[in-house]
Picture 1 (spheres, one colour):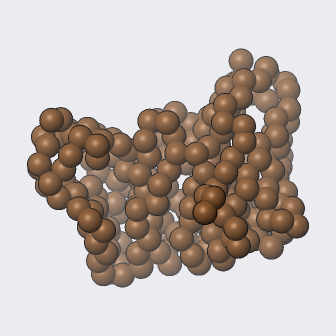
Picture 2: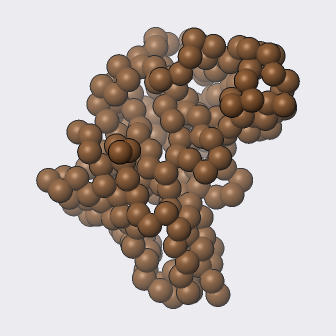
Amino acid sequence: DAGVTQSPTHLIKTRGQHVTLRCSPISGHKSVSWYQQVLGQGPQFIFQYYEKEERGRGNFPDRFSARQFPNYSSELNVNALLLGDSALYLCASSLVAGRTEAFFGQGTRLTVV
Amino acid sequence: KNEVEQSPQNLTAQEGEFITINCSYSVGISALHWLQQHPGGGIVSLFMLSSGKKKHGRLIATINIQEKHSSLHITASHPRDSAVYICAALAGNYGGSQGNLIFGKGTKLSVKP
């Protein structure tokens, strides 16, 4: 069975550019959450989507946006990239939002130069 | 003060030693995850528990809901156990979500042969 898959695995962008990160949840999972992990810190909650609707948003600026598609895959978009956006972006899927075990992808390592 | 605190931050052990990592939280939770993160970044879910104790191989996780405390134990530690161990509280209605994870900063474990 395929686990949570994220693409790309690594990405280098320039300040001011835009980036799109993608996540495919485990088959049958309807909830996707996005987290940002800066080096040396624990992950921080960015967004939660369940049944294609945004169900929660963490303390991130409006430059961060996301969506969930009918097949439950998800995209995280970040506009006007800053150096401080450099981080590991993790996607987690679960069967039911906030109720069942979360499974994580390998993450996308974003470097902004 | 972080809502999820882990101790110790760093831990070095000799192969075969019994290891304990502690996690305290200040938010109301429905469950707590113990996660393992290797240098490549990917996160693996070890346990999700809401009461009592769970065991998987050499790993044991316990939680005391009244005291808001959880522990992860590793028996007969091995160099391949070297990783960052993260506890994450599944908190309801955090950031307006239907429950998402609030992470500790992680405990970096190094097991020497």
